[in-house]
Amino acid sequence: MTKKLNVVPFVSVDNMMKLVLHLGVKRTMTEIADYIEADFKRWPLFDKTPRVASHSDVGVIELMPTSDGEMYGFKYVNGHPKNMKEGLQTVTAFGLLADVNTGYPILLTEMTILTALRTAAMSALAAKHLAPKGATTMAMIGNGAQAEFQALAFGAICGIDTVRLYDTDPAATEKCIRNLANSGLATVPCRSPEEAVEGAQIITTCTADKQYATILTDNLVGAGVHINAVGGDCPGKTELHRDILLRSSIFVEYPPQTRIEGEIQQLEPDHPVTELWEVMTGAAKGRTDARQITLFDSVGFAIEDFSALRYVHDRLKGTYFFEELDMIADPDEPRDLYGMLLRAKDAWQSELISAV
Image 1 (cartoon, one colour):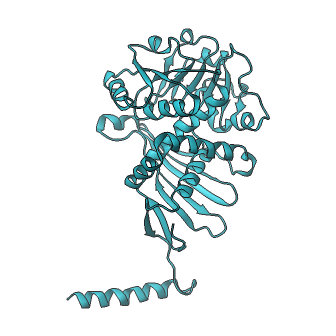
Image 2 (cartoon, rainbow, N blue to C red):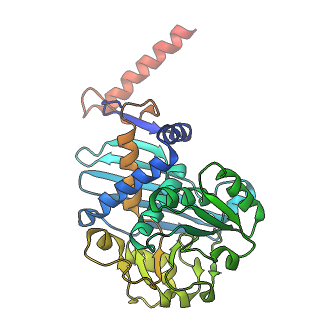
Image 3 (tube, rainbow, N blue to C red):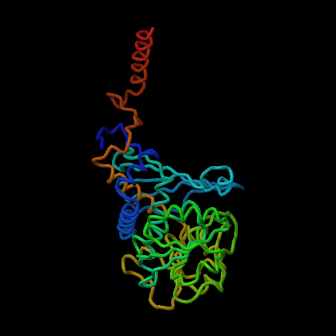
């Protein structure tokens, strides 16, 4: 990768796909999970703040910043459920990584694909610590853009071999089955959430509607399961009946954010939850009983995106899966920025004369 400070590596959608295909989808998610776990284990070093959100009637636009004191990263991301009906992505994103010592960017990248990979990696990482041992079957309720990534990550990281699929749109389920045909996972189409959770040790909910919803009712959740609640990720948007939360041991990324955006927005502000970083460091316990219901109230946190950015930055080395962007003004004399502009004018005029 380039060492010129004024030139920033940029990973386009095309190059991100090439990088992921070069590494392998399962390997990429497994290694991103490793990066996330390594960063969670040094949690106290990071700046931590809930994402900065701008809500509208049709969606949300957010900035997710953090720093470990050596590098700074942020992600721009939106969530617009109505986009799907307009032929657009519900979620799009891009991100930047910078050197704290100079303030100079060291990576600019698309993060629509990377966020899908990171979200699935985080889900499976949480399940590695919380799901019942020997789990082989997952119910996947909501078969949209995130579904295949979740299934593949749980297969690679947690060892599941069967995914029971349900969506209100049968075409989404058909799409998911088609895309997972050669994945090594058995896929079972289901006609209802009730059918999907039959025999599943892990239940993943990942729907898009921006509203209070009850995708999973209390009677569907038996003892001993792990729930991976992905879809509830902003104020006013939930997927689980409140009674499920009251029966579950709840694990979160960052409580000040999750209490506003996650499933636990339905509960009292002091309802007990456990932070995942404490489970990963051994400071707190995860699953302690075979009949325990564990719930990962996933909303996505900036440190996870920071980890994904670090991962891409490291994996780009020695490859050609990026472009060089001339992003930083680099005058010969740092104080002479205007002189640089004047010299550019002279050079530009010379080019125009030569072209005539």
